[in-house]
Image 1: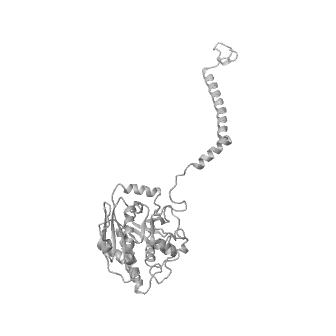
Image 2: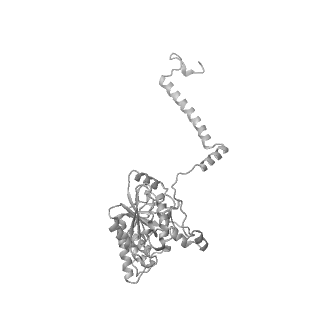
Image 3: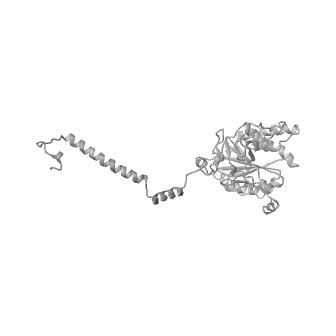
Amino acid sequence: MALFPFCKTPTGALRMSRIHLLLYFLLLSLLVYFLHGRKAGANMRSPHPYFRSMESAIGREKPAMVDAASPRAPQQTPWGAPLVWGDSRTSVRRRTEFAEGEVRIGLLTLVVGKYSQFVRRFVSSAEDYFLPSQKVTYYILTEKPGTFEPPMKLGPGRQLKVVPVAEFPGWDRLVYRRMTLLADTIKDQIGKNIEYIFCADVDQEFVAPVGEEILGDLVATLHPELYGKPRKALPYESDRGSSAYVEDEEGDYYYTSELYGGLVPQVYRLARSCSMLIQKDHANGVMARGREESYLNRYLVAHPPSCVLSPEYSWWDSGRAVDVPVKRLVSLGRQCEAFDAEKREKHRC
């Protein structure tokens, strides 16, 4: 018992209460725990170099959870509207939300003159990729209704309506009338039949899914050759005598006329306003350098879109076009303009 004096019975020379015994036991336990913890901590802070290299390699190989869009690509505009990249988390979520219900959508295009050669490819590609799970009506404004004989085969819930228009003597006349035709068609032909309307040039082809992520009150698409350029490089109308004129301190983006849309009332107001500006300039012998695209941009500067589509939704093979994660809608017409003679022949431009 000499080795354990605190274990003596109360009758011995040294007496210890039970409370003292408990305190000494706790003190000894804390001392052991502290010494063991320091040793373990040292081992954790200083692993063997082999394990450090293994951890480093594993860390490098672990995939990061990022959006599909490049880090340089913002996810929203300066005024807070979404900037849409098709494979972003936001786009995937929106497609899931809309999948629970049906939306009536129109896709409108103007087919005149030589552009009749593009119409079947345009509609066929839209059948594959343009909002395939929704009800879509194709509105084809054309001077040649016979272009659609025999009728094209469409999927369930899809239909095509041909809207005859007067024959145009030349391209210059069409420039002055396109927005007027659009406004009149929305007012007289479409009415309350659909909720959203999208206007697209017919010399395009859908090559990847375009889904419900594009739906918004007023939707515009970024020009692929001008996205990311400084404000001074954007070709807004600079002639103060034109109704399309944009002040130097105005504007954030330059939009293409290849694809735009939104709720029917919103697109009607856009088309009507642009038509009035074009007709006003025409009466004064003026035409903006970008034609109707200049008037479209003038309107969108004054009425910022609630949804901006990335250049994925309007792209063509050009040395100036920005790189995009996915090409979804390709402009064959503008692509041909960018090709040399050899490529034009190869692509049957």
